[in-house]
Image (cartoon, rainbow, N blue to C red; front, side, top):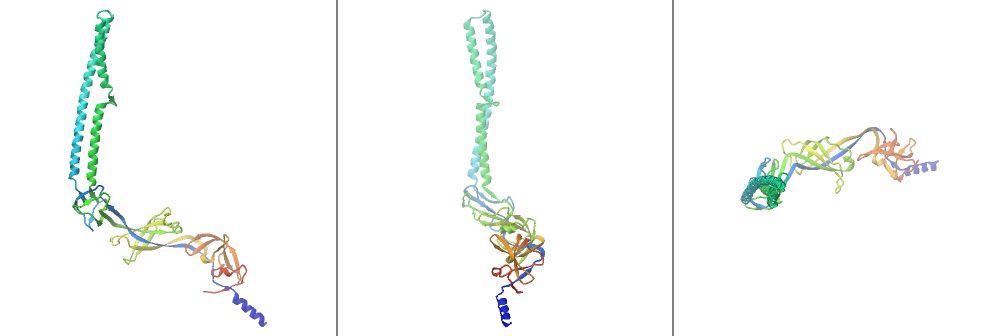
Length: 380
């Protein structure tokens, strides 16, 4: 009898000690933590389009500027001279086109009238020749005069294409070309006056009167802090459940304050480099205390499935492509049970098939268990 008790004690000492959890039906949710940096609604680098010496600068570091306000002007005297010269050349070309048109129109009218007169005379002479009233030499002379008048008229008439003679069209195109050159110079002049594309604060300035500004080199940075966003990155599982329009409460530690916000963008595709998705939260910033570049964080709780069965991730094991759990029987033994997994979150896995409410699943020491093995349950 004493030997049997000793054997029982040895068996109990060798029994695996496990923790278990009862399976219940409840709402399954996902707790998503979002963190990132505040970014201004706009941060725009402004650079001159053309190289040139700076004539005047009208904005200083920290200045608030309005949309369209002049920030910097480059020297314009040489460009103004070129514009005036080309405008004059365009005017002269246009006048030349009008003169050519007037000359052409006068010539073609004259040649047409002469041709019509000679044509009528030639028809009369042919009749007179037919009745023997004039000689062949006389008819030949009139015919030569007729051919010359016809050739002169047709030479001018054949120049017309689409209602305009080639000579006139050439002059017109020269005038149009000169006008386009003037327009291009005027556009260049406008581009040499650097203006604010929107309202904001000058956060960077590298422009001084008299200095040479190089095309494409940053002269100002304009920051619009009137509206602030928070840009975050998340994984694919979180991106699948986050939606635009969700209201969140964002904490900015540097200010020691919370701000109301709303998710306005969830990237529709994964970034190839970071293998993550981008999320943008729009903040309400009525007093403009938030600066760009501050660390901000928030959390979102999302209902994944109401009243479903789920267990801690530690309860589910995978072997040879099969997912299973160990279920504690009433007699203290465990059963290896295949399950079908549904939704996941950071802590739990939904069980679609294989478990029923009220059963108990093993959470620890599963690597020591076998189907039908007796175990000792601990509360810790």
